[in-house]
Length: 127
View 1 (cartoon, helix red, strand yellow):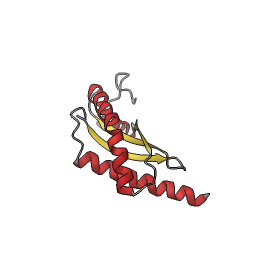
View 2 (cartoon, rainbow, N blue to C red):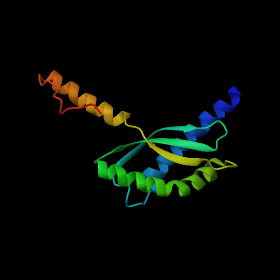
View 3 (cartoon, rainbow, N blue to C red):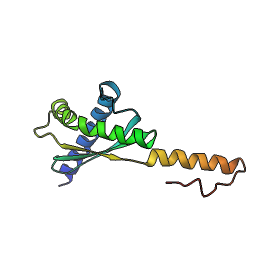
């Protein structure tokens, strides 16, 4: 059983690399307006489903349109991933928001304000 988990981990990393490469080189959907970073991929042990965690920088409307574009690209990416990785079955791709990069930037901003002697207010939420 441990062998299957290692394979799923290897496939997840390969899927992450391929999706990131595609988004940086070939994504031509005009709805993808924000900066997108693929942070992680979680693949089920049977390799049938893959959750792709992405960080999307930008406004809320830009984030929403970017997710629409990513969702519409999922079938094309699915076939590309299966072809490049030579998988018998192409995993279903699902994009999920990973807020950690945005949250880390926000925490960094708040810490720098505190360092400069400015106390955060209620208008400076972390979420």
